[in-house]
Length: 410
Ligand code: 7TS
Image (cartoon, rainbow, N blue to C red; front, side):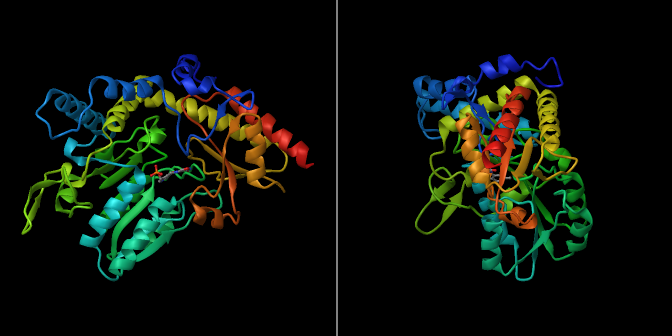
């Protein structure tokens, strides 16, 4: 149980059917939420309900079913708008996930705004999804990438960031929370300093949106992305938030149906926001069910979720710190829901395989954050990542599993 005794953990666990599954004859202990979270019945049922009672293609038909599906999709857009506290629903672009959101900005904003010698600032903490799209656009435009280092605890070095900022900085694209270490980046300060140089700011909110309240207006951030599947929603759907004026000025990312105003072979004009960036038939059922995931999170409340997960992270950190021969990778004081570690002389993949035999799902590898691994001079880590349904007894199961690994390799 959480430190917060009133947290309705039993009811919450009951909302997730998969949590009563067994793996290798043991109860599933799902600690891979950073990769993808499990889905509550509210989300699963909404997917069936859409196909059973309210499905057709959207924004095209005058017929009843098309209207129902379109209304449900646009309702989900308003939910996403409220979730991020965006000023207008036009600023919510549905994308396949954070990866597509970042590629959209790098490609569309980047090609329109970057020139030779312009600088893009990233940090060592970035997931590959927030590195490679910028490398591609840097190659196309002649822009240069600068990287903010981290210290031995995994803390984003604000002083070094300040030194990198200059009149040449056109984009600062950093993660809100590190997927490999859990470090929460002080994004308010990052944004404040970038503003002084008139640089644009993109935050990768993949690992933040499921754990912390996000307010894009209070942050005054230009672009914010997250993936639905890490937010207890479906895979294949995510959100790109962008300030209206910026999105308006950006050229389309993909061309096709839905995103046009009028097409002739001589000239095509584009649809208004948000449709300009939503070419083709969208992931209709996924968008609607993402709305249900947002409702579900709001029903529990971020204060309660954050307190519960913080309690788990503290407890797990304490328990692993007490153990012999465990190195925790990433010890920043401000962390969210992620505990990366290594067991001395045991390969992380062996740890993951043995834990799996106990029904414990953790991630092992470089977590698509190889620069972080390089910084700590490790090839990989074991990563336990917590969600709103995890419990202290699951942390205990992890600790017992680690002890078994140590016994086997002793
Ligand atoms: N950014 C961050 C910070 C992430 O953690 C991830 C996925 C992505 C971007 C890409 O998200 P996608 O939904 O578009 O794939 N992170 C992980 C992870 O940590 N383990 O598996 C996927």
